Structure formats: C-alpha cells, structure tokens
Length: 264
Image (cartoon, rainbow, N blue to C red):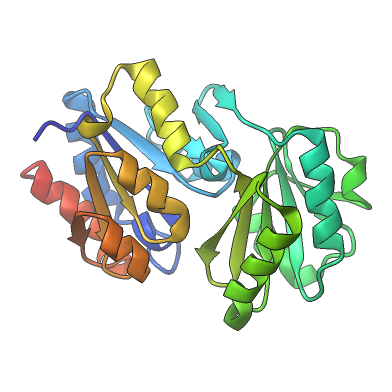
C-alpha cells in the first residue's frame, strides 16, 4: 500500500482529551513522512489560526480548516469556499430565533462572537478561535463567512440539528462535531472538498491518501480516501463507514496506526 498523504481530524482523534498529543512519537513519524515525501494534513472543523498554533514546530504541515472551507499551509491560504450573502443572512436569522444556543460566525479573517455571549462561552471559544472579534451584531461583519459554530444543550444535540436543518434548508449541511457542538457548513464544502483540492494541487490520488476521524463531520473524508481509519471512540456511523480502526484518542490511536503502517 502506497500512502502519499495523511490527513487527521483533531479533537477526539489526533488530540487526547486534554488537547495534547505525544510530540516525541509524532516527531519520529513526521520525520519519516518528510523523508519520504508524504504530506501531513490537519483536517479539522477548527480555525486555521488555531491549527497553525498546534503545528508551529512542524513547518511542512498542510491545513484543511473550518470543515474543509479553507485550505492552506503555514505561509498562505490557498483556497476558501464561503457562503453567499443571502445564505449567511438566512442562517443568522434562524440562529437569532433559536433559544438556548450560543454561536460563532467563522470568517476568513477572523471568527466573530456577539458581545452578548456569556463570559464562559467567550473563554471557551477563545481557545478554539485564537483570532476572534466581538461584535454587537453579525450584520456588522465585513468578511467571507466560511462556517457557523453552534453550542447547544448536549442532550438535545440531535433535536437542534434537525431544527436548524429544517429552518435553514438545503443550502447548508448541519453536522455534529461532538460535545453539544454543531457546525453549519456549506452544502458543497466539507473535509473531502479540501482533500480533493489537495489531490489536484499535489497530484495525489484519493486512493493514495489515509485519513483519521471520529465524528459526523469526518464521514465524507473517510469515504473519499483509500485508507480511512475510525477511532475506537468514534460514533457508530463512523465505525461502520471506515474500513480500518485504531485505538482511542487518549491512547494516541493515530500515532499507533501510523507507526504500524510505516513500520516504525
């Protein structure tokens, strides 16, 4: 089996529950990949600027951020896909009329949070969105909106997903990223979209790619690549979708699988 590109989700996949990874083990894998011209891709629903922070010591890392709506490397953004203005407006209207949620608009230049958000939500959001701007209204934003991130009561995630999908309509996809978090993404942009762009840019076939994931927003990516791997802690549908499985994120399942594949 020839693997020329490895893509991994971050939360509950590459990172353990304390948001860390085993740098010593990864250093060895990353060096092997660099020596053998194998690309490493952080493919996440998280912000581009956060992903760059995680991999600041790994300069050749590529990024498929915002659930596939942004592709780049440490030096530049290669490509983005953003909501049309009318869709952005409709999403905001539905969110404003939905009770018991808090949300963020994720743009190319920054993430945006309402000044009315709770201090707790702002502090949590600051970790995931190191570049974040407070606004009185989302109508004040002058940016391309790539995604919306919504926090809802954990036990009612499925109900909120259905409510948002019905309210906004077919122009968006509503996916769970776990822990009471919902992403509203463009219907035609997901992690597989980002990998398809890299496939063309780097001249790498999908069957030469490996990907790791745990949640619903990883499904398209896991179906797209030739070597899709589900985490042991993945949702049932991910476990059913991916042809391969590794140990859980707290056991560094991504690194364990790569060590086996690369015989390290």
